[in-house]
Image (cartoon, rainbow, N blue to C red; front, top):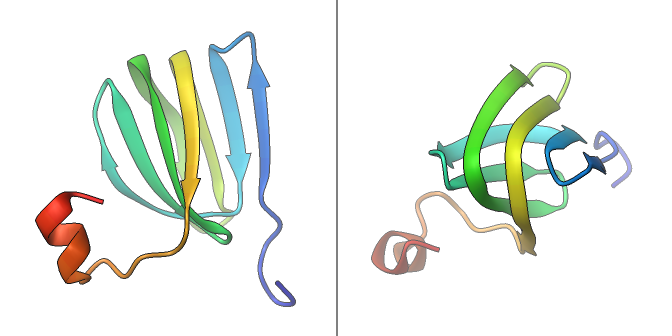
Length: 88
């Protein structure tokens, strides 16, 4: 992580989530947001999720709603056959 932006997570009352080090938002809906971060993929699950702010240039993302899960996975290429077949 020499030249990469630091990744940080701040969650307040499971309702307000702030992240840094976000490179891209791959998918999102009211139940799930899939992000690409410096340290891998991050899946945010919950209810009534809403992206309040997104700045890819600065790597900042803020989300509101009821957060039920944050899950990290290793980086997977968006063209990966496994990702397309299994939705991973």
